[in-house]
Length: 307
Image (tube, rainbow, N blue to C red; front, side, top):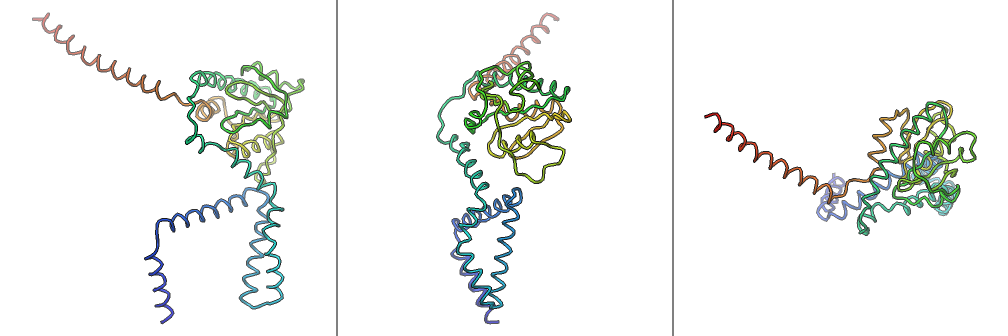
């Protein structure tokens, strides 16, 4: 009973000194462990993480059961476990750090003061229509295609692996690039600011073990590109003609032209500038008020003529 009172007293004293920063500390650690578990589940490092967890459990049991030899071995092993984890998880850690360093979404919101180019919205709208038309045509002929649409992350390293181009995005150009007889048909097309900047590019392959067996290297490359950047990747299967879209490590399959257009319009086309939207809204409001004012006058004039 004394130990229970002592425990309750400790809990009460802890709650009295509990502050907002303690809550933030708990939330940060919880989020870190959650992301670690997701990382272990989605990558090939999952087996290694489970092995390390098993060794930690064995160390705890050896400590409780006072197995001195086992505890000595595990204690020496855990001293170098951090270095071993860095060596074992080197590809995954490098990918995660590259993605963290390339992602400038949060920084652009605070430090970017450049105004969006109004013409970029129209260019992307035309490019999205051309991409959807080309994807539909390539799907009908079972022609494989891989189109990467750059967003915030810079894809200059990927562009260097291919052939530089500078061309408008039109269905005829995309159909020519991915035609089986051309030298660039096996690689990916990179589209930046609504224009084709490179073709025949080599993309990083995904290590996702949950991919279906009916998906080949083209799908794995598209998924890997979406895992390593915030780019949107459109994939057309050469075997089945199925249109897919990869975004943030997720592959959305069996899209038709309209569904693909809706997704690209939502993800790629820049939002309408605030000034233009406000001006359009103000113009609509003034027009509505003018019509409401003119309507009673017309009715009164009509009644006077009747009498």
